[in-house]
Image 1 (cartoon, one colour):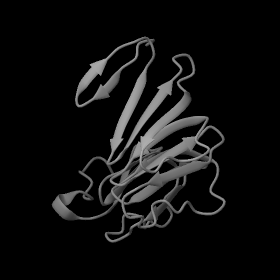
Image 2 (tube, helix red, strand yellow):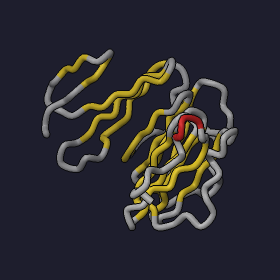
Image 3 (cartoon, one colour):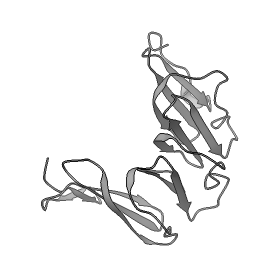
Image 4 (cartoon, rainbow, N blue to C red):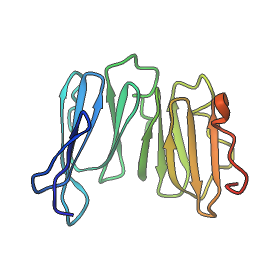
Length: 173
C-alpha cells in the first residue's frame, strides 16, 4: 500500500508513504518504509538517546527501556535511556541476523541459520535460550519472557512462569 499511516496517541494521518512509529519513554521513532521494497529509507529518532550511524534499517523493535534495530547488512544496533541492564550490550561479532525483538530489559535476535541469541536482564530466565533450540523462523519478546516459532510449527517459550505465560497450550508444541 502506498499510503502513509502515522500513529500518535491512537490517531492516524495518511500522506502517501507508509510510516510506522513507536514511542519509547523519552525517545520517539519514525520508520519510513519504501512501498516497493519494504526496506527502510531512514529511521528518525528524537528525544533522549539518539544513536549514531543508524541507516539502512530493515526492522526495529521497542522494549520497555530500549530500542533495537536490524540493519540491512545483518548487524544490530541498540540504544535507550532507562537503566541499561545489559540489553544494550550487543554480543561481540554478532552478524547474520534476520529478526530482532525487544522485551522489557532484554533483547533477542534470530540469525539466518535459525538460531536465537539473547542478552540483557535475565531475572526470570528470559535470556537463557533453551539448549539445542534451532530451526527457528520467528521470535518475540515479552516483558520477562521470550518465544520462538520453529519450522515444524511448534512454539517454544521461556522466562517467567507468572500467569502461565510460558505454558504453551496443547497442540502448539
